[in-house]
Image (cartoon, rainbow, N blue to C red):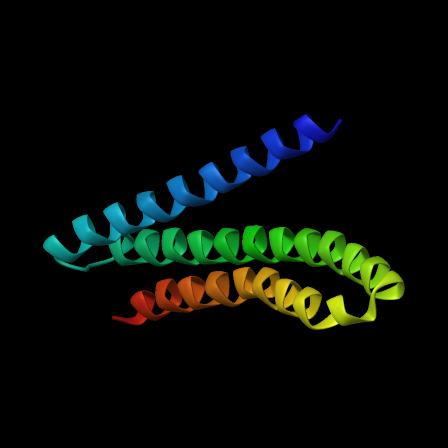
Length: 114
């Protein structure tokens, strides 16, 4: 069960990376061609889909990590209170995954208008 979850997470991360790379490639090709009609619309749709997928995967991963680390951290802090600071730091690092996903999605959305 646990190995299957890691494989699914790795596959989703690979798909998010491939989606972002495909959107960047499509955006680069669209910039070399004149932006008329459907070319710019397809570029915008591709970038928006890549941004949504990137955000979804990063938030799901961060939520899973915070849930697992947070429950273990509170259990450890209940037994040894001096571990609370370290455990809060680990939870914050896991939450950083969502922030980085948000920044990447924001950069992709900004490319739609330009």
